[in-house]
Image (cartoon, rainbow over all chains, first blue to last red; front, side):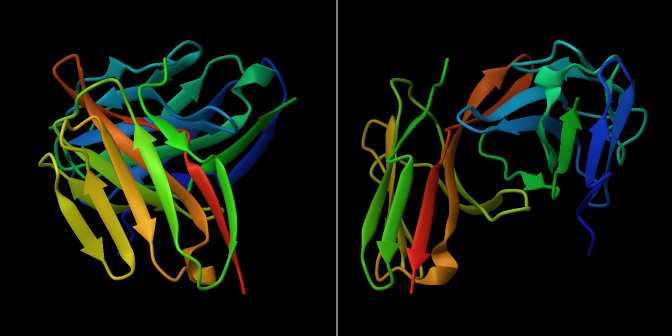
Length: 114
Length: 113
C-alpha cells in the first residue's frame, strides 16, 4: 500500500531556479494539500484542492503554484526559488475536505534553496 | 495568527514517567485531531475528538476535548522510548468551500531509557 508518494526526497536548489515537487496518491481521495513545515512555525498550508480541477490558496501561497489535472496528482511548483522557501514540504490527502477528515501525509521533501 | 497554542514546546523525560501535553485556543472547534510525527516522516493521525468533554483512550494515551471545545490535552502514562516524537494538535477551520486543518506548532517529546 503506497498511500502518498512524494518526490524528490530531498533537493538542493540554486536561487532563481524553477522546481516542481511531485505528489501522487493511490487512495482516490478527493482533497489534497501542500504544507510546509519550518522550525518554530509548525505546519502551514500552502495550497489545497478540494477535488480534481479545482485549487485554492492556503495561508502561505506566495511564490508557489499548483495544478490538479486528475485525482491522483498534485504537483507544487516554485517558479523562481528563494532562500526563504527552504523548508520541508508535505503533501497530504483526505477523502473529502469536510470537517474532521483524517489527513494522510507523505514522507516529505526536504528542499534547500541556496 | 496561530490559532492553536501547544505547551510545552519541548519535553524530555525518562521511561516510565507520566506526562501531559496541552493544546489551547480562543476559537471553538467542531473537532480536533492529534497527530504524531517521527523524524523524516509525515504526521500520522492518532485520534479525533468531536464532543465537548469527550475522553478517548489509545493504549497508554488518553485524549480529552475541553467542555467548550476550545482546548484539548494528551496524557501519556508510563512513557516509553517508542513514544518519542513530535505531537501535533490540529483543528479544522472553514476555508473557502471546505475546511483546512490548522496545526499547532507541536510538542517535541523525548523519552530516554
